[in-house]
Length: 439
Ligand code: GDP
Ligand code: GDP
Image (cartoon, helix red, strand yellow):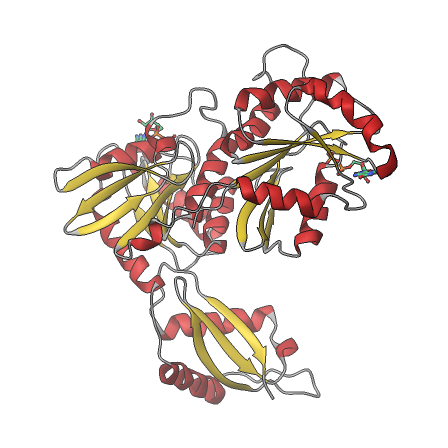
C-alpha cells in the first residue's frame, strides 16, 4: 500500500525534530523508523486512527544567500521531499517572530501549492497565543496554528486534520491479485531507465500506463507471456526530473516510495563502481518493507578482465551481507545481456515470497533442530521451543512459541533463519521470525 508523505519543513532550531518526537508519542504509533537514509533526515511510518503516512523530517533548511531557490543542494533535498509530500507542516518559532529565513522557506512552500499547515511553535503559554500568532499571516501560507512541540498541546487535533487531508487510498492495487508489483531502484546513473526501456522494449510485452496513487506517480503495466506486472512509479525513471536530475537524495525518496508499493525490488547496481553504501541503504529499505530482492549487476560490458569482474563480486559479498539470500544477475542494459532472464527471476522470487509452509513441515524442522541443534541456556534456564507456525505471508512470517523469549539471542535468530533457509526454498525473499512466550 502506498503511504502518503507528510513533510516537515522549516529553518533550523524551530523545533522540527521535537515535533516529530511529540507526534511519535502522541500517536503511540511510529511503527518504523529508519534514520540515516541520508545523513540528517529521517523517515517514520506513523499511524493515526488507522491511517498510515510517512513522516519525513527534512532537516534544517539552511539560510539562503542568493535569490535562486535551487541554489544549494541542501535546499534541493528538503524541497525534493516536500515535492513528494501530500501535506506540508511548515514550522516557525513563535517566540522569535518572523525571520528572513522563514520568509524564504515560505516562498518555497507557496510555490509547491500543497495543503500546508503553518505551525507556530514554542507558544508554551496558551494565554499569550493570539498576540504572537497574527504576525505569521504575513508569510502568506494560511492561518497560523499554535503548537507546543515541547508540551504537546495541539498535536492531536493537528493529526486529525492532517489525516483528513491525505488522499484517499485508491485500493485499486489490492484488487489485482495476479499482478506483480515491481520497483526498479538504485543510484542515479546505475542504468535504471536504460534497463526499464530494454525490459519493456520487446514485442512480447504489451505496455500501458496508469496513474499511481500519488501525484505524478505513473505506473506501467506490462503483460508478458500471459502474466501481468505493474512497474511502479516509472515516471521518475522514464522522464527525469529537470530540476533534481542526478540528485542522490531525490532518487532515494522516489525509490522509497516505489519500494513501499512493490512486491519485488530490482536493485540496479552499477558494476563499473561496484556495490556502494547507497546501494546498501536501498537494499536495507527494501528488505525492511518486505520486498523480494533481485540484484542486477548492470554495465557488465564495461568490465575489462577477470580482475575487474572479481573486484565487483567482492563488493557484492562484502556489502550485501544483509541479503545473502538474494539472487543476482550480471546484465547489460546497453547490449541486452541477460535482460530477458530478469522476468523469470522476478516470478521465482515473488513465488517464494508467497510461500506457505505447513505446520507439520515446520514442526519436523523443529524436531530436527532439537536433535541436532545446540542447546541454548543462560546457565539456569534452558530454551525450549514448543512449536512454530506460519503467521504471515508476503513475506513469510513465522512465530515460534518458546518458554523464555529472552533466551533467544540475535545470533540464535540468525542460526534459525539459516536452518530454515537450508530446509525450505526462500531464495530471493526476506523472512520474518517472531518469538512468543508460552509455558
Ligand atoms: P529543529 O532544528 O527544527 O529540528 O529544532 P529542534 O527540534 O532541535 O528544537 C530546537 C530547540 O527548540 C531545542 O532546544 C528544543 O528543546 C526547543 N523547542 C522545541 N519545541 C519547543 C517548544 O514547544 N517550546 C519551547 N520552549 N522550546 C522548544
Ligand atoms: P538511471 O539514472 O539509473 O536511470 O541511469 P540511465 O539509464 O540513465 O543510465 C546512465 C548512463 O549509463 C547512460 O549514459 C546509459 O547509457 C549508461 N548505461 C546504462 N546501462 C548501461 C550498460 O549496461 N552498459 C553501459 N556501458 N552503459 C550503460
